[in-house]
Length: 363
Ligand code: F6P
Image 1 (cartoon, rainbow, N blue to C red):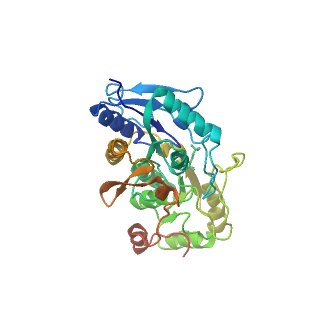
Image 2 (cartoon, rainbow, N blue to C red):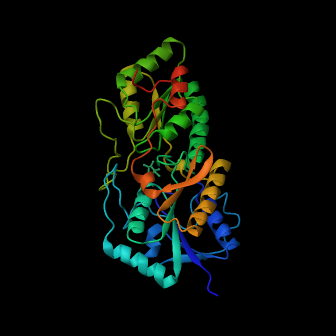
């Protein structure tokens, strides 16, 4: 008898925990007697030239601890549906038809899309056109609605925290202002969690526009109090109040969604000019996305992967698995992609930071 077949793909920027999720999909599907086709490079693997790998339990042994994704991924290309906040494009009809043909041709009954906001928007559109698809949320940015956490986030936070530990000793030796730029296009989750855990003195996030004069004031105040080193964490998408544009690295503008980066260099210049302090900027960049997942992210990835197979079993297409208040559940993909989950400026982490005298650059 022919075995039921499902597909799995990873799409969007990679993050630690993807392989754990893939392994859980494969193990739980195998237990049900299903076959798993892993599509290569995200949705791209579903269209000509179709690329996939049949995955079984043995193939995925030992991958739980690996960063990245064994299936490959892409965060642009023909399935791009979101450019910037809220600007949604429809997938061309011929792509949707091709996806359907591939699934039909291979006898695949359903597909799991492991992706962030942009990829799940594409998944939703495919679902609306009749593709049996379920979602698994992932992103280091932790900015997806309808789930408290996405895997990849805590691994990135851990790296930021360890980087601050290292940078603090050199900043102290040289009595410098050290600015650490972290990822987070539209939200400041990584900056907030990493900065708080890593003992930052100022944390600058997109949700709280900063003022240069307030940052300079904090640096001078610290010096007056005998603290000659200042640690500042800034999310790549943080912006000054007086200049509400994202800082885009020169020569790295790209149509649709700009490639952010460089806000730390801008801060480095201005803080030095305003305070006379020796100042250095460090951009952590893709180091935050690479490397092995933390135990939390491995477990979350596996819980999501196994739950996604459960969704297919129950034929709950158009749904995404989620983690809320310590429970694994599911929500319509539509709910997860309607708006980005921003940092609530009254959340306990912000309150704690403020209570400890950590500045957000606005007062
Ligand atoms: O995964 C999201 C993200 O990490 C953003 O924070 C960042 O702006 C972007 O990916 C960088 O992506 P790329 O790999 O295209 O440089």
